[in-house]
Length: 249
Ligand code: PGA
Image 1 (cartoon, rainbow, N blue to C red):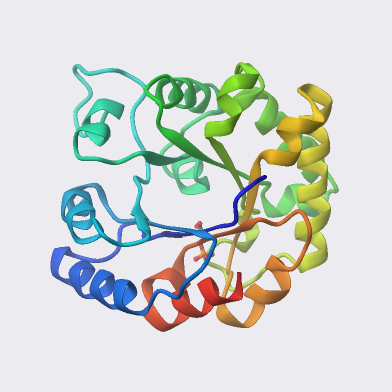
Image 2: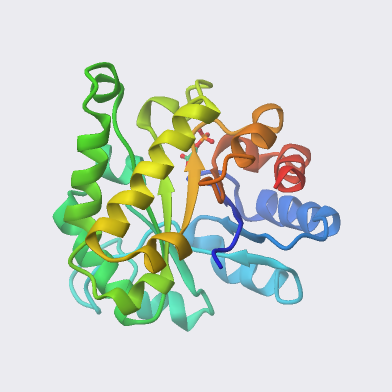
């Protein structure tokens, strides 16, 4: 059975002190839920987040990592470094990593393999740009991102993968894919995985939707059968909004 997940991606937001306040509020208010709840603070705040969340249902996760074990990669963080502070899950392939930092499908495939080899769980993000959607090329783009990023993986490791479909045109723009558009793409993703691997893997992988999820639209998006939760940016920085989204699942 695939799990329901609500994950907050805090990006380059919240200083140490601001994060402490947000985490304390979230821990106090997080409702009882069967869903997995995750938050991704910036690297420098991760050890503190881990300590603060030791007895909480909220899991601290990383926003990124490098594929190399160690070495001359100034400014980068390795899988072992994450494991060394207790982190078990990493987001890879966020559209900002792809577009702002030039991470290609090839780089992301290497990162994914490196993370899975260390038994890290991977939240793998992908999604089309506005022009792709307008030209009707969105299914092709997503198909290629899945193929190039993930379809070289052995079937066994899929239990450690969570997918996050994030149409780039909906990220931080206030524009959301309609629940129907999200469902249509999630069903396509599941079918593509089923064709490449099998029904079992396709049915058991959690597929999150990301892109301007807010308290006002979360319930409807999460109600779709192939949407297993959300990767939340802006709204996860506000306690009441994030709690409301968690309640929606
Ligand atoms: P948003 O970001 O919720 O602010 O649109 C989503 C994301 O980048 O994961």
